[in-house]
Each structure stands twice: as structure tokens, then as C-alpha cells.
Image 1 (cartoon, rainbow, N blue to C red):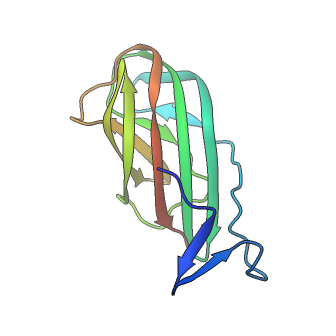
Image 2 (image 1 turned 180 degrees about the vertical axis):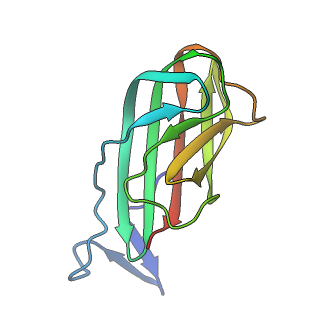
Image 3 (image 1 turned 45 degrees about the vertical axis):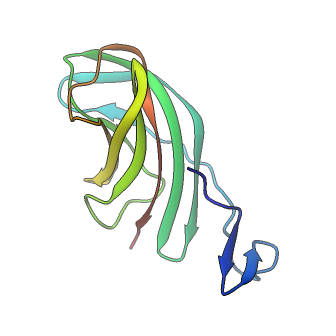
Length: 139
């Protein structure tokens, strides 16, 4: 899922160049990745890491893969670009755990959490990750 580079409002197409003083441009951030329990998550690479802030909302896109180790657990955790105001804001997601499948993601304790569709433990090994896009409120 991608966010448009412009916003349709009231029949008028508004884009960054036409709105003085507002900046909806995508920005990069440097997330940190971790895992729940005793599982490790290392060698993480990011294909897409971008966000934009509009008022008190943050829209983001994140595609990543890494290597899990230790004792298998249920969560991959990513630091967001701006701390979410609320817990348990849900996002559409895909989970890569061997193959690409449906996943589910949400905010919790200042992180973006990704789980397999059934809440099962992640596999241990390389090429584990996800694709997440969403919008959440900030203070």
C-alpha cells in the first residue's frame, strides 16, 4: 500500500507545491528492530523506510527482512519515526516467514509490532520480515 504524493480534497487536487507552508514530503528514518522474548532479530535490511507527518498524524511505509535466532517467539518490533499516541492501532501488513503471507501489525509500548497472521512463533533463520503501511496519531 502506498500513500499518494498528493491529496484529493473537495474536488481540488492539492499537492506539496500548491500548499504554502505545509510539507507532505516523504522523509526517511532509521528504525531499530528487535524481537519479543528470547528471540533475536539481526542483520535487518530495509527496502522502504519512509514517513510523512500531516498535522497530528503520521503515515508510514516499511519493508524489511532480517535473521531470527535464539528461542522462537511471536513478535518483531520496529521503532517508529515518531512515538504513537495510542496502543493497539492496527495496520495492514504482510509477513515473510518462509513465504509471504498475511500478517498483522499494531502499535504497542511505543513500537510497531508485526505478527504472523495466526499469532504463531516466527521461524528461526534468514529472510524473516514484513511490509507494513499505516497511519497513526501523535501528541
